[in-house]
Length: 339
Image (cartoon, rainbow, N blue to C red; front, top):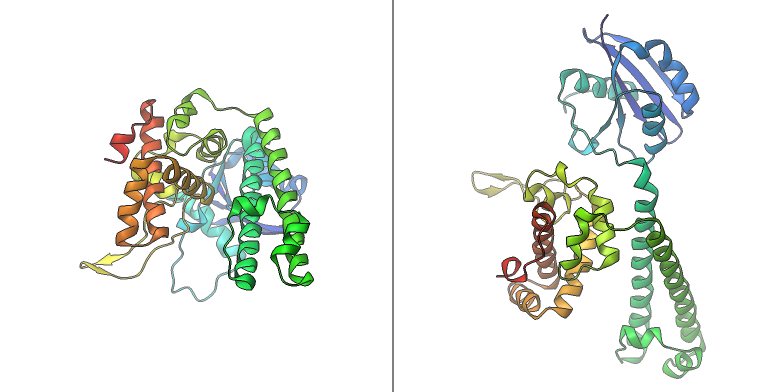
């Protein structure tokens, strides 16, 4: 009995299912609505022969991958950023994309993504929501700073903004309209800050640092929340055989293409995990503020380039240090990391 290899091209409201056999022949091909029971019913007659199903890694893959795995299918998540078809093809569509996924699986050359364990996915997404709200809070604070400086010529610190009352805002700004703009932004910022606290409370009630990740708390700039973020975003550290792969996944390395010693453009700089990148940038900012040795490293880098590159260099150092801290289960060594 020939094995079957399936490819599923997933969209927002429908999917294209394709099954091919060992002879590259299409056995089944159909577009279907995104309804799990319907998809399972279509696959059921072929289940004993199905060697594996490939699902395209889109923003909405959770329900489909989870449902197929519960039904007993071997499922693979395709790393779409690493898949490339022949550029000379004149015609491609959803059906050809699904066939291509199935063929890659049949040939054993499918670039796969990590299927994050369902049990921890909800808490991880809650932490992702927290990081989104933190960025929103910072954006509102910077908006107030810019508005006050633009209209008064005076600078104001973030800590001062957080304590402003409505009366003080009216005293600082020359018109009622500008004061209203600031007070409305302050209201939103404080509401977001309250929600961040609420999310942190829920996260800590549902998850704690697993023993292999507790050494993260010894790393400069990393506290409980950032350690939880790194743990939940990393998943299993065993999937990173080298420190270079870990740093690349954290978006802490450059992406360049060289030929004969000359730069020929750059690769996909967005490959990797943006939430880990954010976590290490946050850790770098805290580390520069509170650790003199790291601050000196940052200042040397900043003198040669500029602040953004310098803080990313600190983040890269911290990411590499975390890899060894987690791999070897040892405390963070500041002298080794920032010699």
